Amino acid sequence: MNFGAYANRAVLTAVDLVNSPDLDEATAAALLTNRGWALTEPPPPAELERLRTTLRAVFGAGDERAVVAALNAVLADRHALPQLTDHDGAWHWHYAPDGAGVADRVAATTAAALLTVIADGGADRLRVCAADGCQDVFVDLSRNGSRRFCSSRSCGNRTHAAAYRARRR
Image 1: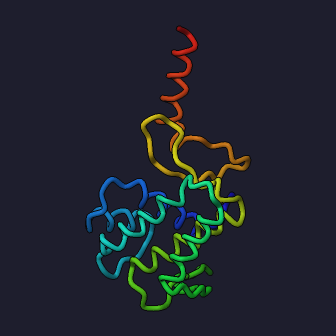
Image 2: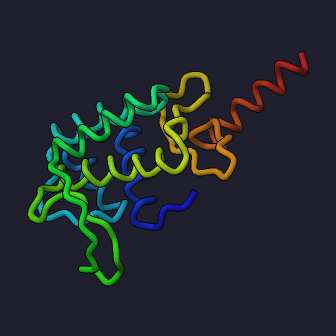
Image 3: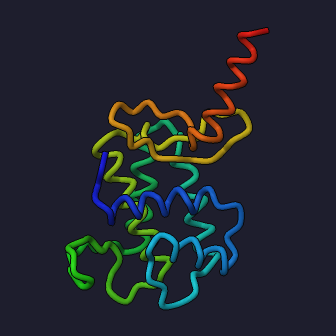
């Protein structure tokens, strides 16, 4: 699945928000700027924490209608107003109204991106890592929807190595 660079960035922002261990102002600013968000103000940690709690609940929830309702509520709470714009050269969607703060822009855009994932692939694409002891989330963008781990290099490799060792005993 490929939703374009802008939507993929929003999906990855949602994953980063949920997986970040701490959301103080500096961490939140670094996370957002690393994903290409233009910050005109410091991101309010309390609002991003509230968004993170909502987003965490939709990953691996299983009940597609409840997930869609939760994400639609984020859009409604942020007064989402989808608009196509080319202010930076390429056409892309803005979901928050003009003049919205960074928390509103991040919330509306990440919710819309996750809803796009659900519309194209189903809510079961929003997953929690299958490795023992890992609670990180990820979006399975693979063609066949078979990804199980947040990272094949760490969690996947560790799980497969442990299974191999157990079989050898």
